[in-house]
Amino acid sequence: MATIRPFRALRPSSESASHVSAVPYDVVNTAEAVALAKGNPLSFLHVSRPEIDLPAGIDVYSAEVYSKAAENFERLKTAAPMFVEETPSLYVYRLRMGDHIQSGIAACCSIDEYESNIVRKHERTRKDKEDDRTRHMLSLSAQTGPVFLTYRGRDEINDLVIRALQQDPLYDFVAPDNVAHTVWRISDDDRDLVVDAFKAVPRLYIADGHHRAASASRARTELSGNSKPDGNEEYNFFLAVLFPADQLQILSYNRVVKELHGLSPGAFMTEVSRKFDVSEAASGSPTQKSEINMYLGGKWYRLTLPMGTTNPIDPLSSLDVSVLQERLLDPVLGIADVRTDKRIDFVGGVRGISALEQMVNEGRAAVAFSLYPVTVNDLMAIADANGIMPPKSTWFEPKLRDGLLSHLI
Image (cartoon, rainbow, N blue to C red):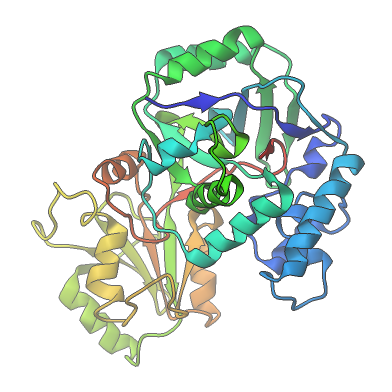
């Protein structure tokens, strides 16, 4: 069963929420964070990316950065202002992007269940990123960005969410990227009903936020020390928003490669033709799974595998990102580890096909690959099999914002 727990959220006033909220720390680099926070002293980026308030070029993992995060956090509590909820609460967090709407439950989840695999993972984490968020949590004594979880939906939970939407929202604003964010506090009468309803959910799945979850686990180890915790301490739980799987939207996570590993475009195309059936494509967007579109020399090509090449029973090997990696990126372009090889970059599908074309046309990349989005069912099937998806396989959109609900530990 899945455990969710109400918590006393640290949150901004309704009037300042739109100014405080910020994109997740890990979807922007320092320069982008500087631009987004410019002219807005309330932006949570001053807390999540505090290097923007320090001299340019500073090591983002230096002690000064975490000290600045804590300093900015304390300043923001007064300036926003921010306050701690009087009673432990649950919330509904709704995202609207165009015609797409998804509504999740903001709550705390059990680190014990994360470690025992009731909360399922599909991605490996990097130690340097874990180190960063662990130090950030410990410096602030808070988890300030939620883990994005999903689960196989249940009618009784959906009904309780719909009931919460009948109340006046705490927050209701449209962010600069035109995504609408609306948050309701679930009534005290329904709070326990929601907790009980999740006891019938056998598993939760991390959609986005593996490093935040792993860091919460490590922070728990640091905070518990040699003491004997009773299990109810706040550091035994991590901040999350839980969405039913049938409401989620996954966009493609595309690839661009800077050079062709010493091959001419013609020689590279010959190698591609040995691995795939190749035809010209009318556009850059694949129309179905098992179809990869490639942009080379100002033209789009469709790459497909001959029938029977992959095992449809194995959800991991049949992923298009796996096919591209195992048949082309590694053996032809020499990119064995996409996490560390500097010749490859990743472009979220929200940026569109034109971003891929522009990078190749401007000479910033030699070739681009457009992929059909992975499905939520793919993700859950691989996680259920204790498999690990290739890096940068999923791009969830829209994204939650940091700073609206924080969990003190």
